[in-house]
Length: 256
Length: 268
Image (tube, rainbow over all chains, first blue to last red; front, side, top):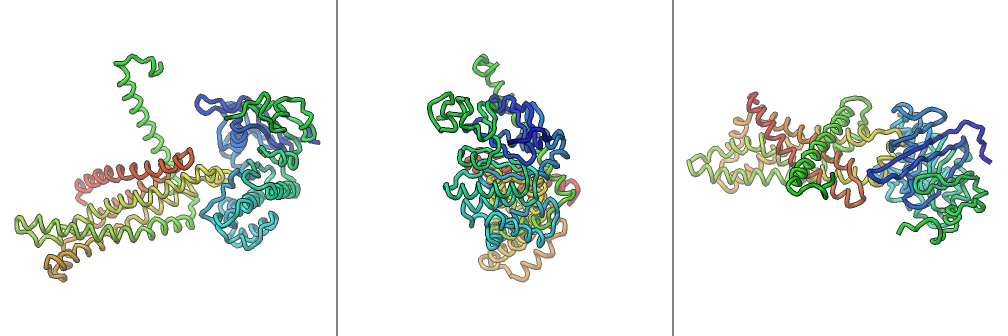
């Protein structure tokens, strides 16, 4: 059960965001307690990725505020603080293909924290081991890794600096069910070891049930339901039920 | 009022206005982007490893294409000058005009245009691919500014390596002219080189190298700018590469005229 008494590590209040005439977010409110895992579900194009990008300062909301650990994220300095204390696993991995695996994993240590290359490589290999990648993978190029290995390397990059909050954007997209389950297990295991809070967006209901403490459903730019993962099957919300059961019939019109 | 409701006689004005405003907006974007990148080039933190990596990519790997370009240009120039000079018995000036033409004009401009194709398009495609695959967003989440980590090393490398490439092109271009002059036009090889060496001045070489440094900055900046703005998948990346080449080529030719005017005025 989520501890609502603790000060949220992340708060999004009344976030609005439009791209030209298209209003994507219409007042999104999200809170994430320290050490807890929130999963945001919703159809394609409902604004899940935009929500995460607003939280990370990659997009500037048109309206609303983002607070990290109680502090309003409004200046470059506060943005820098939030980025130092967060990790992000992008949908496609977003690994830098001009660098080796270990340079990718330890990028924040090398270029932000100015850690020496020897020490950075040592820590990268330790972190690769946590995500079940062998030390022999450290010197490979990104193109030499399989999709599952790339996801693991991206996970290692997200956790190497011991963040307080980790964002996962579709962590199992493009993976076979077995590899996807292995990645979910790694996420749960590593997040628990770090004691970090997480915000995950996914369509994969198996991932939701495995990694979520709480679930929020985003539809047409607003959170329309939120509750503990145990309540997902008894939400009483027609939108949530349709999405969870993957039915074409219901209030949500398929985007085709 | 939308274009649909605009009375027909006013539509050309609307089109002209929109085009002018669009052009001004683009100039503003380029100026703002260039300002941020140039600031990153001259203030800490600079990543030397990245600068060296880009110097190798931009400079070293461009040597073959620059060498080939220069040798053929030098050869063709010698033939043309010989043919033209023969009309008023001035064939003996081939070495003088070849070295002057190559060092002051053809060396920097042709190297610049070749690299606008090779380097600017390459940078735009690479940065564009990074943009559409969220690698630039990933950089930001890792507290690395793209201006510092991606763009400044490329611009520094462009400014640093273009003069070296132009110097190489000058030498190879003169040798191309020498090959044709000695092999096909019956010039004395030693005399040709002596005439070249005694005629060329430091100002001829320096003016070409200064142009090269400016062109190097333009080539890298246009590649970074168009790559940074690309969106929409593979099509967007391709469009960015095309725009980078066209933009860099036009800016090279325009800035070449401006720089030449300045050099003539100050006697360089």
